[in-house]
Length: 119
Image (cartoon, rainbow, N blue to C red; front, side):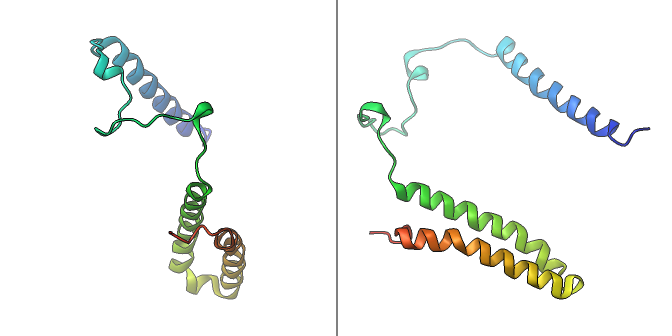
């Protein structure tokens, strides 16, 4: 048997379940819409008027998001390296130091842009 057949079967089953769930919710789900359900959810706070064109997000928003992603990726790669540190020996250490050197580039960029200052 081809080794990809079980993977294709699982992908087909996942697709079937996803499409089946969406179809079942549209057929079975309630259709009682009122004004409160159609309004945007604002946590009980009165919505503020938006600027023309949707307004702009401050750059700090994107810098914080970028920091989260960078450190998330760093942790994802550091855990397996730490687990197999003794078996990788010098090659693993050099590869991880190169990775850490590359990962500091966005961190230094954000630092220089003032993304770490909270005033």
